[in-house]
Image (cartoon, rainbow, N blue to C red):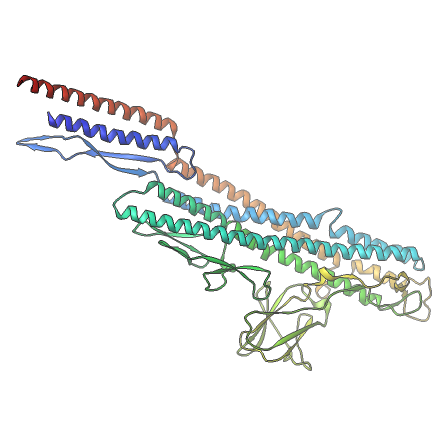
Length: 544
């Protein structure tokens, strides 16, 4: 009788726990990252009575979560890729809109500037036409300054986004390290921390939305996380934090360092942070450089031509535009006493790229930061024999230590500082500089009008208008490419999420069927227990 009652009680206990598990599944049907849990049952050890082997009931052997490791890894990977492309597309689109605006873009202002030159060339003695030329010149320079200010504002925003991303990464990595501790304790006690594992998977997925991480599961149930080139973000229960630091050349430019062990910004990829960094390096900085190059060579081309003419008073033309001098930036890690001065020697040979000048064991080395190529240098850096390359020269004073560095952006300040250099319309040098020139002479003004179609950019390879269109085209291409990439990654992410949900998601119809099945088994076990109890009471009563 006790055997019958014991089997019945085992059924009651087992199916009660099965119902509790099913109830847990239903309650978490809409919980993000939850994995459906299933119970596994097996028979209890039988009893041997002579030649007879009698069963002794059922027991719950485990509660497992439905989990496909490969589906989860794919979901993480596509999440990181989509977040990067989506962020890159969003930020690039803003610059695309800024530059291509039909009213506030650069092209409309340049067109009006060229139109006013043509108008002044038809009546060079007209002060009204000259005032209009100065007005459109001021509008054009203001447009350069305005676009550069907008780009600077976006740059400030990227710094703020990078800072916020570092904070989020540190918060999530701390959470994962804490979950690792709880998981390892449960595993050490022989338990199955299903809900904790789901919470950790959700945190890792959230982390991949910010930056791509690789994972490695340990035998104790913990998971280690790595970023960049394999830097350990989480090792078991130990968290290593990221830090926000300033660029060695520009303290206002946010960089990411790893636990005081050095800057790793260039190694980070994936997630929204990867998209921000790709935008800053591949779109924002090149666009600002190209904008500066356009401002610089517009000013240089018109200044050169303007100086070849004479104004209404017969004086030789001065500069029509002004731009700031080149300001190199020394690395904060420099240990020597060297200082650097940079001068543009051939403005039309400038590329618009930035350069790093480094002191090596064999002397000075110049590297283009855009294409990463070493640039051939001439000279020794003295005032008598300056270092020269790509349209600019460098004079070094003081003593440089090994690995001292300087950042040189020859056109970096041009868009921000370009301005009209004259205010008196009579000083516009419209006439040629010869004895036959008079108030109605327009030969120099016609030469300035011809600059619209003259190839002056980068050693005469493109016109200024070509440069504007090239800048717009590169931004538009990146915007379109990232849009296509984001759409493709969205499709892959949807598929990966669906695959994960097919394996781990809760099916309410299936759970409802399980409730009925387990309920019936529970009720049947209760009925067996009731019968066993009744038979036991009958036997007892027979002896009273």
